[in-house]
Image (tube, rainbow, N blue to C red; front, side, top):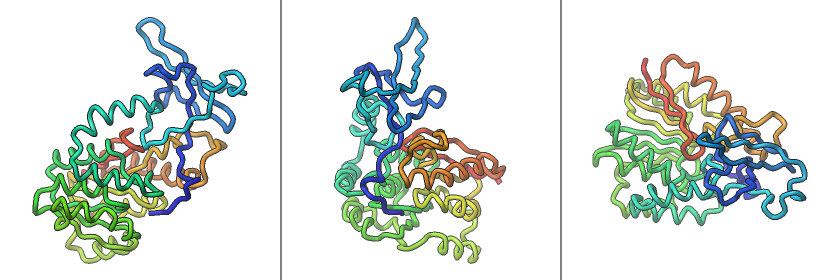
Length: 304
């Protein structure tokens, strides 16, 4: 997983509301959201009658016209919702009250890490945990581990004899979460391999015995290799099994204009994410579902 500087790890989308306290202010929606340029900001209008329309538009010199309410604001979480209050409501109402103690502990430990935005969000962890239970997953793979929050969510969903092949280029980050995983009694389900995943996948395909052997594969790693992963993983996941690609909406930058002032790392990887999304949509071997959970996750169900 790539290491970013603290200056890099900032979502590229900003949204300014004239009614900061309104729960409907500047909700993210691809048909209404426009991206601002460096010194442009968003505003929203209110509802009329029974129909609610949120209109975001560019306002020049917003600082002068809106004063303190026109500040540049950046959302400091991995949700595509442009409302901190609404996202916090989801977390406090549906996620945190049901979050297992081990996951809470690891989440709080990871929050102190300088690259904490690389972790899976709590709501996405909850989603993955339920998804794995619904498909009765037993044999899984994870490419890109970081401190292991999504790995822990997976391990908790698998039966006692379930297995996870986990790969990451940085074992030090994994070691941060390992004591929590061990304390939860789940370490026996995990086989961790340090290093690039592609050589491991190539060897598995060459061996032949792993074809169609995985129920679920989760990828949250180097975006410039997502297509390379897909070319291999489609052979390793079973027919009817799922591959989940994380960050497929990439901070919302997938709908940004070409000249939008994006962070360097966002701009660099955006083209790879766009290429992946286009390829997955055209792949006849899979069914897909792209969800605005976390930073966007695309589920691919192998059908042939």
